[in-house]
Amino acid sequence: MKTIAFSFLFMLTSVTACTQEKENNSLAVLKKKTINTVPFLTKNNDFVYVDKTSLKPIINQKFRRASVFTPTGFAVVENEKNEYAAIDEKGKIVLGFSAEEIGLNVINGLTFYKKDIEYEKKMPAWKWEWSIMGGGIKKEQTYHKIEIGVLETKQILLQEDIPYMEKSYYLNFLSVDENHVFWNGTLYEIKKSRLHTIENNTAELLENKRFIKASNASFSMYGLNQKKAIHNGLTGSEKLSIQFRKETITLDEVNKERYDPEVPKLLVDNKTNDVYPFPQYEKVFPKEITKATASQIDFIKKTSLVYSITNSPYFLLGVFNYDHDIWAFDWLYIDTKGNVVDSIDTYNFKVLDQLGYMVWPDRKMILPDQFINKNWKFGKIKSYQGMNNLYLIRIENEKKEGTMGLWDSGKKTWEIKPEYHDISVLNIEKQIYALQKEEKGLYTLYDQKNNKSIGSKAYQSINSDGLVTVKVNSGENKSYYIDLDSGKEFKEE
Image (cartoon, rainbow, N blue to C red; front, side):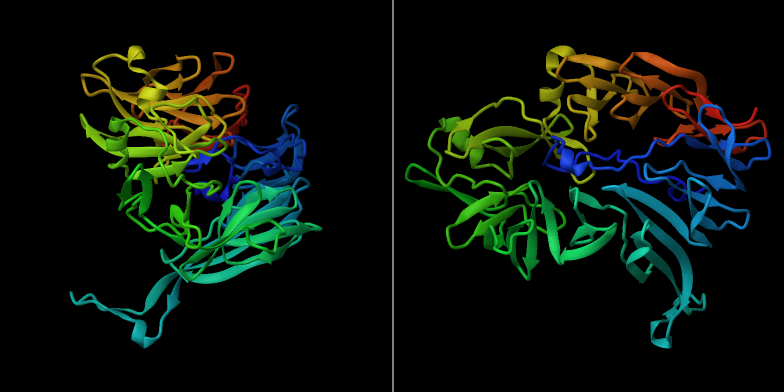
């Protein structure tokens, strides 16, 4: 079973690298319906849709596979011919059966779909691949046929055939406000459930309805529905200079990355020499240090990371420190007036690496030394948008045994003790988790908010949409749905 075809994209996502985690209500507009219909597995291994409470059939059709309904009332189903379709709550087909896999995502009350199929395409002779090992000639190349659009209006936003692994498109639509969305470098306005382009070639979406446009090596910042740029003619840099008394401190390699980002981490206004740091480029880095100790100046001269702490007057200064097999940074902070300090008040701001693991706040800020076992070593720390002070922390003891726990940095306590091989986040708002005690062991449901287990069953896997997998007596895996709130299983006994 290919999971992507049977679950719409639940918004369980890592906190965007270096962004303010504060939720903006205008970015979460969903015209939700009350969905009481769920997929129910029969004894014949078919899925039918039933009422969640009474388990009475709602839709008469049977399907080989079926997904839960989106908040807008659509689901993906598969028939016996391994063909996929999208249906509404009454069972009416809204995207006809075909071999193309279907994914759904809901943003601003609209349902976006993606149809995708892999196939072999015959190539012209000059693109044939000749095997030097005598394996013959490959005259075909693997391609993907992709279509992305709006389900409610059947509006097609993209249709493309692309070589396999050369390019990818995702349903990663972002809400700007209730009337605008951002996707694939384009800003759209929503009118009568259709998307209308208002800006192309948008390199990055920022907070407060701002965005960055790129033109060759130059960048401009705009506000939504503003024709005049907020900042114009910005260029990228990895060099940063700052004055301290009569000395000019020049940092030659700041925010250097393995791969060049689409928008540089430092944008410079060449007319004023103002420097706007990543991630929101919302304030100017000070040109002069007005207050700092000698040790702080020595630290700044070694700085390799400079980020703006959003919704605060501070910038983050990091010096890479490889200590005791741990890759980490040491930190200082400087405000917009040039005052350097060793520590600041807690801000709801997190810096992640390219893989989504925590860089700042670091382990010592999150989990101070007085709360740890001296023999512990720490692995990656992870958090998701909406988790606030909660962090998933991996620990290794003196026996090289790895475990994971859920730590609350505000309360300074383990909400889930580090006694588990794996902890999966299923629902952030309701604080529902899947716990795996031992490697290759089964997962159980846990309600952290009420500090209790949910249900009595254990599963090979548990997804955030309620899809679980169990191993039956024949040794094969069987998948069906459960209610994450209660553990109730939607299958025929």
